[in-house]
Length: 227
Image (tube, rainbow, N blue to C red; front, side, top):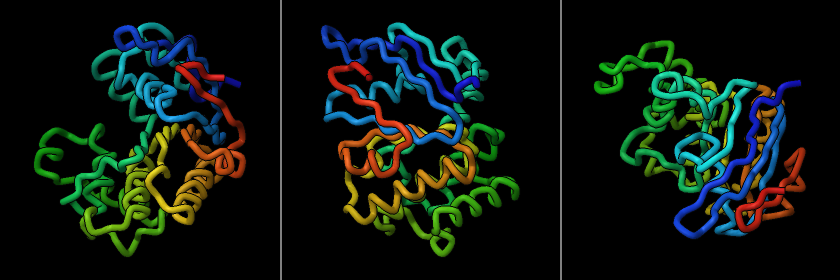
C-alpha cells in the first residue's frame, strides 16, 4: 500500500551545521507515529522540510505517491492543504475568536476578497463549527483566543487542521508547554483522529512514556538523524 506521507533522503544545513541528515520516513493513513528527541535534534527542521515551509538541500517528499517536492506555485499550495501543522505555541491570532482562527484553515480554498473581508461562505463556517465541536469547544466558538486556556488554544489549533480537511497532521511538540493532564487530553484527541478520520499523525515529543502510550510506532531523532 502506498504510504500517505513519505520522505526520502531529506537533508538540510544551516551554514556549517547539519540540521537534517538524510532523513527517511513512511507513514500510513490512520497511523500515529511519534518522533522522540531532545531539543535541537532536528525535529522542527524535519517538519518544516516535510511541508516545504523550509526547502531541503536535497531529498524528496511524497503525499499519497504524488511528489510534493516537484510542485510550485498554486499546485504546491493546493497540495499543502493535505498537511495540517499543529505547533507548540499554537500560532493563533490572539485577538480573534476561536471560529475565526479555525476558519484560517479554509483560507487556501477561499476567494481573496473573502479572506480580506473575513467573510466566509456558510459551508466553510459549518465546517469550522463542526471542527470545534469535535475538539469539545462547541461552547467557546465566539470566545477570543487569548481568553482561552493553553489546552483550549491547542484544541483550536487542532480544529484548524481538521477544518483544513488535512489528511496528515504534523504536531510539532504540541504538549511541551501544557500540564500533564492537558497533555494527555491533547494526545488522546490526536490519536482519536487517526481512528475516526483515518488521518496520519506525526507527533514530535520529549516524553518517552507518552510516545509509548499513544504511538503505533516510535522513531528517534538525534543530531539530525532519524532512526
